[in-house]
Length: 303
Image (cartoon, rainbow, N blue to C red; front, top):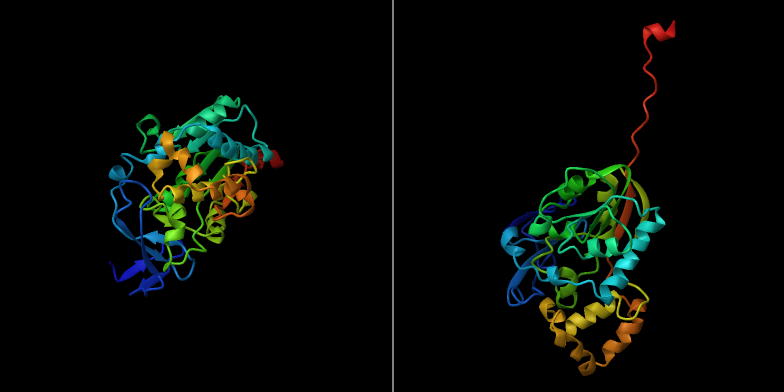
């Protein structure tokens, strides 16, 4: 454990951090569930940092969320995400990049909804590992900045892929209410060791302002919070807890049997929207259009 830690979000330096700043929790995947992961919460901005060294190539070689399918739950939540973009004017002929796309579930959903010009980028998934060399009408970076070593540098990278006048969506987890002496209730949002830096809603807005883009809309609730049965964050959290907070178990065909062993899950399936267990702030930004240059004024034109 280091004696001095620097916050990547606000620059605060903690020398010999106290017990209230430090904590440890297990991971929520089979591979990391028995491993203790060390976290530090910045006293100034409340960002949570994983302070253990990591090999990203090894970390993501068998990432469980890349087993996701475009099922009923995914369709319900992704419909909510797409609705946010369409309310800002996203058209069917828009070019869209899903930055950090995983196995491409959102890409498949967009194409099924009639969006033809859709690309994905994820350096840890071979099928999407090549970074695009073009700009897009809309770049979606959902659940990305908490997974990287330097959120600010990553925001600069995907911001450069937005064409002038285009849209940029950034969504992430929320660190603010997490107490370092009681991390177990937050295992899903902490998602260790994959979440490297988790920020607050306020910090997300500050990072967004640094891009120079205009704020179009912002949300505190997760895009996974919908009124559709089973499609809300609270149900997903409680379902995961009932399965021991091991992600792989939720993809197993027998996972649904837990619904009959834990009848309370039915309550969350239908009413969980009204009792969220966590928030996932998001911002929708618009890149300023390129200023139209007027005719060059020369000495000859002034005469």
